[in-house]
Image (cartoon, rainbow, N blue to C red; front, side, top):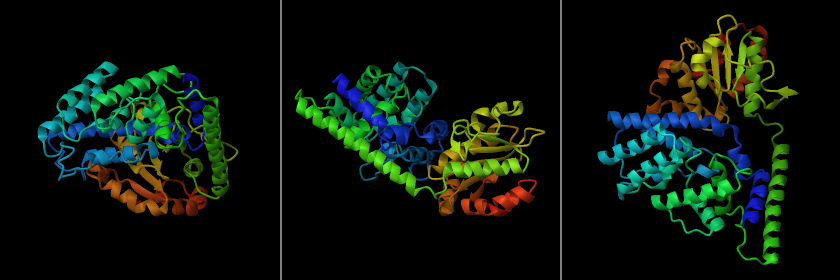
Amino acid sequence: MHAAVSLLIDHWKADPHGTFNTWFLWEERLKNFRSIRRGIGQVVRDIESGTFGNVYRGSSLETVVGSVAEQRQIFRGADHAFLWKPKLRIPDIYENLANQRAFARLLNACDCCDTASEVVEAIRKIDALAIKGLGPAVANLLYFIHPTLVCPFNTAIVKGFNAVTGSNVKLGRWDHYLSMREGMIRVNDAHRQKLSNDLGAVAGLMFDVGSGRYAAPPRLQDPGVFAQWEADLLRVREESAAAQRQWAINRNSDVTHTDIQGSLRDLGKSLGFDVWIAANDRGRVFGTGLLGDGCLQQLPPGVEQGSDSIRLIDVVWMERESSRVAAAFEVEHSTSIYSGIVRMLDLALGTQVAGQSTLFLVAPDNRRDEVAQQLKRPAFSRVSELGIRYLPYSQLKAHQEAIGRFGSSIKPLLEISQLL
């Protein structure tokens, strides 16, 4: 079985449409950890201060769970477990204040601890309270706090784990989740060199098995059965590779996230600014070079106070003389707008060097309403003070050349963007 699982992992990692390549190696995945963890902290603060309310819609919990649910296919539907179902009175954390506070204690305990034993203890405490409807789906929040200690949880992951290991884990029970977590860690340890310290990798493998993309290794020792299983693995990978090649052909005229970052990089240089590209994007291929070519390789000394926030913002323009942040841009091509807004808030509220810098959310023209809706969330009540602006792709592309040739400041960008 060990060799079969190893073979399964090899095919899964080589599959361009498997969760390893589409989610685990997805650049935005790591950028979202900080914003989701910050959102979890806001949920705790709201509950502790008595401002959380008694409904899911419009709460800080809806904001952060919605961001988790947008983390590609593996987390789709993560918000279902938290939606308030009044007829069933589940999950019972909206109208029961004691349960609500217990939920906050769980989140806070996991946010403040750093060992597996402390995380498990916090889970067992919440399990002992038997809060109706509050089950292992909460692990999807805890994963973004401790990805090396907590594995994600959903129906497909459970089905995949049971199929691969022969277990009988049941949905909705914390004790079964903890048992599955131990089993996932054993599988991960056995194939550590091919997987990751981050339990999201092994969870993604189980998800693809549980969702039917791959069949679990056969338990029969029949060579014919095993050969057929190997052939099926190869077929899935080859079909995915063919689809990936066709996708690459079809997208050659499409604007991408990297294209927009490159446009903002070149425009910033033309206007005489030093440019910072998000730390995890600098190595992306753009044109005949890399996205980070000619850009700052380190943040200036005056920006160190806010380095954790600034280093993951898509593009930042800095004045060369003062190292003041003149403008910051989050490109929201197709991913969650929530995370970009959180990084903007961290920059504006957590650093003195930001000062009067202008903050832009750059997105396709058809995402304007989505941007406006996100900015109106209660969790972003302070956004209106910052004057974050929406810059549509079409306006940037139409005016980039003229602004770069005749402009000398960010004023033209104010003319082609909108205050929301």
